[in-house]
Amino acid sequence: MSYRETEHLQVLIANERKDRLALVAPIVANLGHEVVASEIDVMDVGAVAAKEQPDVALVGLGQSSEHALALIDQIVHEAACPVILLIHAPDPAFVKEASKRGIFAYITDAEVDDWQSAIDIVLRRFTEYHDLEGAFGRRAVTERAKGILMERHSVDDADAFEMLRDQSRQANTKLADVAAAVVDGHPLLPKQPDISS
Picture 1 (spheres, rainbow, N blue to C red):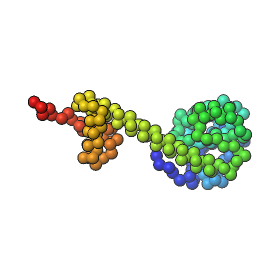
Picture 2 (picture 1 turned 90 degrees about the horizontal axis):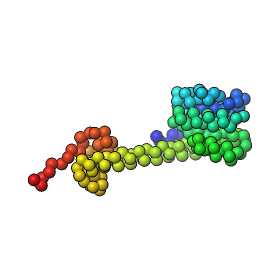
Picture 3 (picture 1 turned 30 degrees about the vertical axis):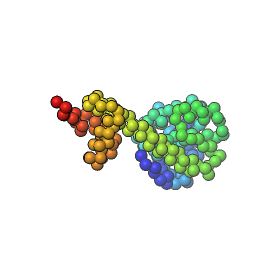
């Protein structure tokens, strides 16, 4: 996932109060973004987020903090987008609880001029998070492939890595792709014949 320009984003807004949704939607539109969905019901917001695939979600704190936290839970669980908490006034305890649920930032409705900057920062951090998550995944696959090669060829960790690297160079392909092929059972690196006999 690469960092995408933050012009004309698709934004999901969620709040239990319809009057707050009505206030937030025009602000988002004035920033040049499209509101793809406005949701109140916790039971629907996850499915809507999964269907619409917004670039970012704004979840407002309405009358019930539990409702807002449930909205955050559903969006984080169903959508591959960052969630920004929208609150009326600073509330450190609630922000802390929302951060445990997966928000990437919070903004207040008193700082409308700062919303776009917050969105820009959140999207960049979200991209970095996904890149890091991908790097950890690639490392795990490489470690699994090394383990397979160590067992298959009776070699140590360094030799297994060299086998992956050599195959990567010979095939002119990424090491992670070679590792994935080994993990998937591809006979890419068959056991070398024993020449000592």
